[in-house]
Length: 139
Image 1 (cartoon, rainbow, N blue to C red):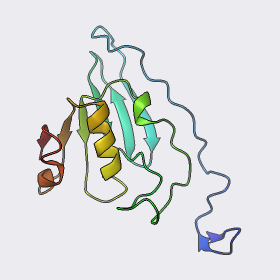
Image 2: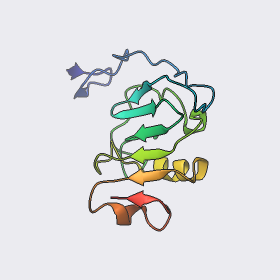
Image 3: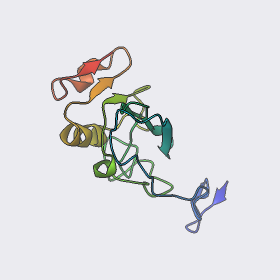
């Protein structure tokens, strides 16, 4: 903790404390796969590939800022390891709670467009936030 190059106090963001590595997802959704894989995509976001082909995305945030607007608010310390378009299959999206660093509107809208059949599991009281744009929201 200390001042950055502009003299602003806060956590050091240069160089990144964790190297960013592009993830390697399983190439197919093979139901014969016996491999279980969990890929960390930053902060609380994980992409989990279960044996048999089931895929779950936890707390996805694929925006530059954890904020209701993208021109201000806390900015990422590191670049995103991948884009939503790089994720081959999403069956379920799990949102643990509704803080901006776990629930991002832009990300949810992009996921809905890219993976329209995904189901969303959200905390109690948050289902209305997802409807009507998302058909499959469970709380």
